[in-house]
Length: 224
Ligand code: TYD
Image (cartoon, rainbow, N blue to C red; front, side):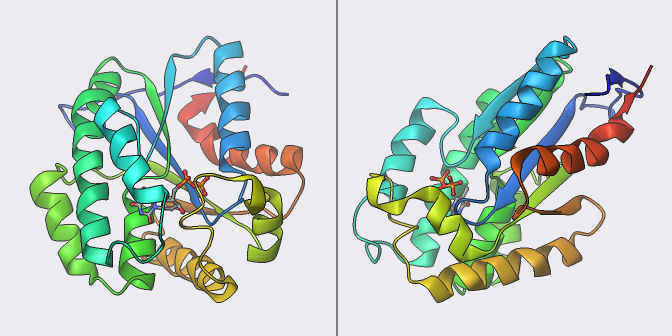
């Protein structure tokens, strides 16, 4: 693997530093594996970073996560779901993401706002404006610097997840066309936010996918 070093590691606004990278995608798109690879690469290069996730990331967030990802699939409507995700996100930003960015670290989050836009919004029926208003009013209107969307064929993704062995199976248990819709909507989202979103073909093998990811983050770094 080619070595990468930090270049231009400076704030986009006066108050903020660090780089905020999010991974998004449907079930079984391989986000956690790729995040692990990226974390290993950054550690090898002695680049300070944190790995976090949504829902979750904080103690309260992990408790909210349990409410959201376990149990009956119909127990919450899209709005209640979104408010739970937003509450978790607000805490996550305050306690984990902003402090790490302030420390000039790279923050890598497994899912963030875009999951709400796709799952509760485009698929769940909540309008985008409502989601963005809540985000603006309660979640500091914070957007990632870079969003890597792992685009996987839903059938392959669900196979990868081996759904029968999961406890956290609320979202996975929606029927197949739900997952196809999620995939389509992530594609749509990548076009709406084309400046910060990069679509990655996640049907390929892990190393191949990772090389593509490195290509997309390289410009934040300088190579020797
Ligand atoms: P998770 O268990 O981390 O699944 P995965 O391994 O596929 O990332 O995520 C839990 C589920 O929560 C996932 O199916 C997507 C969903 N989700 C939303 O619907 N809205 C959100 O805002 C977030 C952050 C996640």
